Image (cartoon, rainbow, N blue to C red; front, side, top):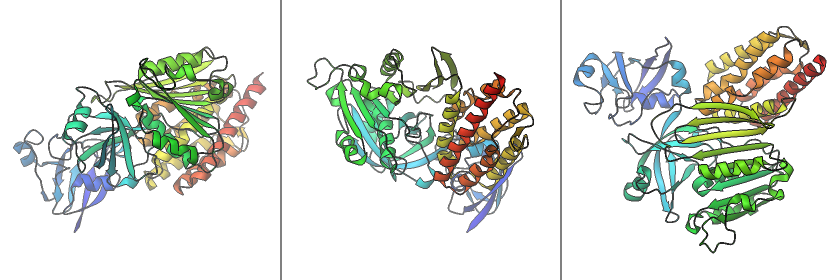
Length: 516
């Protein structure tokens, strides 16, 4: 029998969910895609402590540290343990916005645990309610065993369409996850996975692609290759250079080899830096990079590896006569997995390039673009981010979201009359709110920060201050994009985003020409 649970949030919003008598309130909320706070799911941490205003329930099992007898007597509950006997009203200690946009914590079961080499473990996880997890190739999850007060961050090595997700882990002496995977973990064990996280992901493959992997930085690169193999329209060359310290660090070669048949134009080779190795190619990946890989600066470069490798590649690329148009990187350090969640963003421009870096404890994601006088790169970067974030949120948005999204579009459109810009300042502000909405809704702080630190608003302020012309197609596209997202027609979404981006660039160029 199902009971109705009213979840009353701190901002005055109440959401109603159905909860079976053999189901916890937290599980029912999760199924309704409402991310109320919880962590351990075992009644041990107290993260999900809430106050029950009315209703009868089975309080479940928990420890004193999570919920005291006095608190329980007052009406406090742990939603991860509480099961309803009747309808209930529960006060949730967060806002409705946070409940909708916070990163989801999922439960998974280890289905495979394989020691690929003396330095690397691969594990596979079957996610409960797999259809609720949308991730982009290149992103990562924060992963922890149940009841652990720590987590570690690992990139998916599987493609987003695969039912079973996989991860690669470099074994580190004394590392908590290393010791867990080698000494304790067994097939059938449960894991908590929070995410997806990060803004390192595959953009639309319109330029030649160079993939660089260092050690278990191969994981997100494998995910990218899986996604590319599903693209029936892929018509650009893809190259992979895979570097490692020792021979035994090279793994997954059989799987990499399959991409020769699965991609129209793919090749790869490996490099080992150990001077004692008998490997065919020794040294560093930069010593084996050629003009073929960089395509005179036209290639999009993706790199995931340890910090020294990332810095060496960054320096190498900057020193090229024609550096790549777009360089995306992610580096993990041993600090990854601390319980801190703060992140910082920096944006710099120098030597004809602009860089946006998002730094969180143990993880740094960055993107470097060759700056252009007409700021076209700003709008192209925005479009690439939007294509990614729509993949993340397309199954999360509800009727309330689409109503709000359309109101943002209508407000932006209210400053346009045909091909005339009525109020440039008002339009720029409303247009920014429209484009920012999906990033706020995604719950992915790195993606939101990457969008926020684009320079599009400043560029528009400079160019449109005295402008009166705007491409008329923009009005229709604002709403058509929402319709396509609601219909989950991703091909139509891409077509509209490309058209919208071209119209935005055209508006900017004409404004600049008119001011000259």
